[in-house]
Image (cartoon, rainbow, N blue to C red):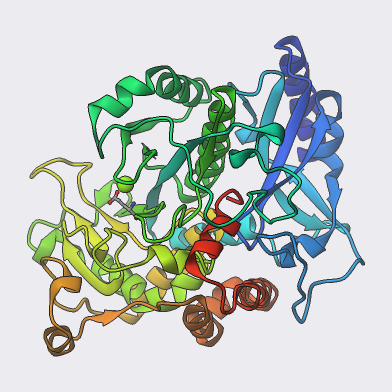
Length: 478
Ligand code: GLU
Ligand code: MG
C-alpha cells in the first residue's frame, strides 16, 4: 500500500520545496482574495512549504470583512479579533514568479482549525459551484480579460506624484493629481507598442514563463491602458490565473519604473478597466454553443444558463462590480455593458454572444462585460455558475437579442423593448444581492453575509464623495 493522502502531500511538498530551493526560490507568497477584491497574502520561506501544505498557515477570519481601504467591518458571523483559520496552499498551482526573482506563488483554500472548510472561503465556493455544474453534466470553460492602466511611478516612496506620507488613502497629494502616462500613442495604436516595447515584451515573457496561455496583448482605449486575455480554462483555474496575471503585470510594471492600476475607474469620466468574463458550456465533447438546428446555435441548456445569468445580472453586479468606483465605470456607451440585455457580437450588450467564425469548433462562447477587476474572481466565477445553473434548471428563456447601442436609443424605445439599465450604484446592486435567494443559497449565509457587509461599508465610506475623489482613493488599491 502506498502512503496516505497526508503523507503523499508532505512528500510532494518536500520535493517541490527542494526543487524551488535549487532554483533559488527563497520564499512563497500564499494568496487569497478577500471580499473587497484585494489579494491578501502570508508568505513563507521555501523550507516551510511542506508544513504549510500539511498544517496550513494561520490567518484571522477578520479579513473576510476587510474593505478595500483596510477598514474592518462586521457581519452577523464575522468580525472582531477572535478565531483563526488555516491557509492551505494548492500545490498544483505552485508557480515560480518570473518578475519577482527568488519568489514563488500559490493560491490557498481556507479551513478552520479542526479541518472543516471555512464557510467564507471564496475559492472553495467557486469549486463547489464547478462541482454542481459537473453534477448537472456540464463542463464550463472560462477566461478573464485583464485591463490595466500604466503610469509613471516617480517620487519618494514610489507613489505616483511623489506624495508618500500625505496620509491619503492612495498616497496622492490630492484628487487633481495629473497622471503621467509612459506612452502617448492612440487607442489600439501600434505606436504604444513601440513606445513600451521592452515593457510589453517583459509582460509577455513573464506570463509565458509562468505557464499562462496568453491569447492577446494589446493597447486599449483609455490613456496608458493595455489588455491581456488568457485562454479558456477550468473556472477555478481561470480565477487563479487572473490573480497571477494581475500580480505579474504589477511586478513587471514596477521593474520598469511604472505602476499598474487595475481599478475600475482610474480617472473619473474616462473609459475604465473592465475584467470581462468569457464562458462556454459543453456536455462532454459537445459544445452547447454549436447546436446546428437551434436558434443562435444555442442548445436549450445553454439558453437556460445564459438567461439565468442575464436575469440575475443586477444582483451579480454586487459581486462583479463591487466598489463604488465600479459604477463610475459602468456608464452607457463605454463598452462596459450598462444595460441588462444580450446581443449577438454586440459590445454594448452586458451579455455578448460570441459566435466566432462559422465552423470554428472553439468559437462559440459568451462574454459578461460589466465585471471589473475589483471583483474577487472566485466569487465572480461561483456566482455566475450559480445563476446560470439555476436558469438552466428553471428553463429560463432569453429575451430577444439587442443589436446596436442600447444607450443610443430613446428612453421610450428602451422601455418599449424592455431594456433596463443595470444598477447604477453599489447600494442598488447590494440590495438585490441581499434579496437574491439563488445567490444566498449558493454562497451560504456566512459568505453571503460577509460580502454584503463589506459592500455596505464601502458604500458608507464613499457616501456623498465626488467621483474624482472616489477614483483617486481607489486607483492604487487593486
Ligand atoms: N474598457 C472597457 C470596459 O470598461 C472594455 C473595452 C473592451 O471592450 O475591451 O469594460
Ligand atoms: Mg478590452
